[in-house]
Image: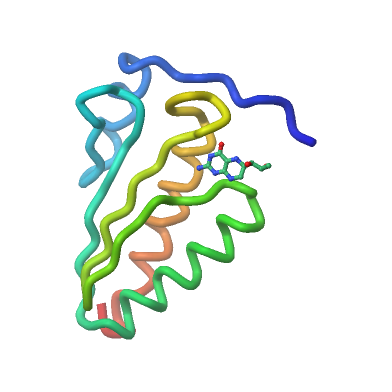
Length: 106
Ligand code: H2B
């Protein structure tokens, strides 16, 4: 099994978020979140399917909520009690997948 991930402090997370438009740090500094709006449910669910497969492969899973074309996603590392590098990796995957959905209904 992988070693426990190292927790990142809020200052480190804030510095990272400067380069991640759309993502916000929670007031408690323990998670990051973003809202994606797609053209329709098909695009939103396609996004979720691709991110789910990547998440399962990485053994790092999002907390998320979907209504029609909207996906609210929150990332935190339970094993670290806050943010870790794994959250930023999954955020980058989600952004890349969302970008790819443009032209497929997004
Ligand atoms: N997902 C997230 N977001 N945080 C974790 O700490 C985490 C996870 N831990 N997915 C994984 C699964 C752990 O429970 C398994 C046993 O590796």
